[in-house]
Image (cartoon, rainbow, N blue to C red; front, side, top):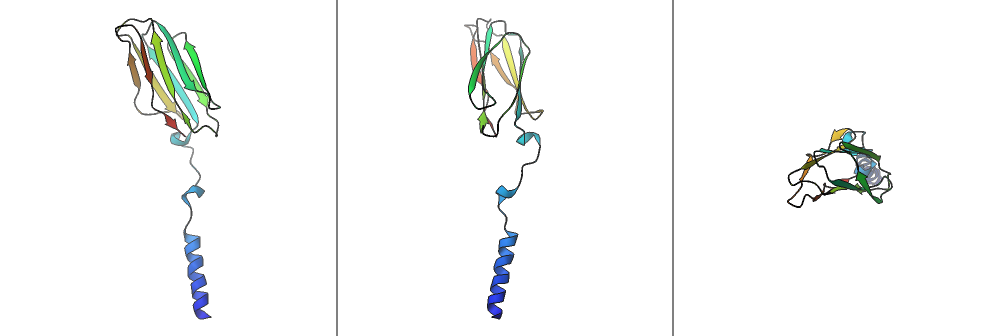
Length: 131
């Protein structure tokens, strides 16, 4: 009987002390925020298109009519990742566009810079943001 009580006590101690990592709730730091802000600046004079993941997880192509351009999106919990790509045409070789991505108000990685090639165009995608 004494051995049974010791075995149950040992087993309950092990079960209580082991907790799954998934039980932990994420904090509200920038890394867990679902609010993403895209900021496009530069001297590109041609036409610009931003293709990005929408708040619900679809994709959309928006014409950027003037620089600077900013878009803030609060992503739904069902969205697991987001991406943005900037394309331009009809500009002058050497003109630039800079994309800064912020998550929860904090910049994610380094800014992306795209430079128009000899044809006056470019297309560049930013790294994926995973939620």
